[in-house]
Length: 296
Image (cartoon, rainbow, N blue to C red):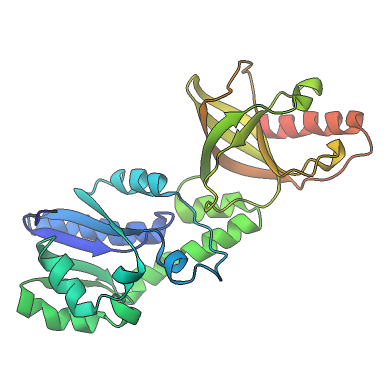
């Protein structure tokens, strides 16, 4: 890693790259433009909590690393640096972090940080420390005040809670975009086809990825053949007597083999809870109602 000329840097996990994060990223880009520098985002993988508390952690992330990289690059920053977070890395002192990474490796000219930023071993480093180190190592600190960050009133925790409640519309408002997940289509039992609603069984979803609450959703899906509207079920399909947890999507106006292909679905609206029906005919009638809602 070579030092970057007039690097304007911010750091964070940025899970979700939500509207709160974008407040920081917008400030980063505007500051870089003002000082004729280059905007640099430093993020970490795996998530620090997954490394520090591996045996007592139910954390699920809004985005996979690949999704986070795509979202961060899509904000228009100049450089993205992904640092591997290990236990050894977590023991770096705040001074060594500033000296060895921010200064020596990145060539930091200015730091853009929110008011509550902590870093280094045991989160010992604060904005006050950065202001002390700045004159010594030749960088300035640009603090994003509390009222700017808190005014957005968005956090990754709030988004995870909205998804756990099945409120994908609220999650989308926090994210500034619909929540999405990706996977590969694998062979299923073809029961959906028998009911008149063939489904793509989505597998190989990153196990660390947070999932919306079980139920039926209106979605939009990207596949190699294009973008299609559809409806998606997350759950165990109790009417069919199968307790295997699945993610299955029915695409409207599409009828081709998707096995082995990648698919990305965006959650637009929750339609209903998953429930058990007395027979397949009642399930078929409900699917027709679901499809009408999802098409609307």
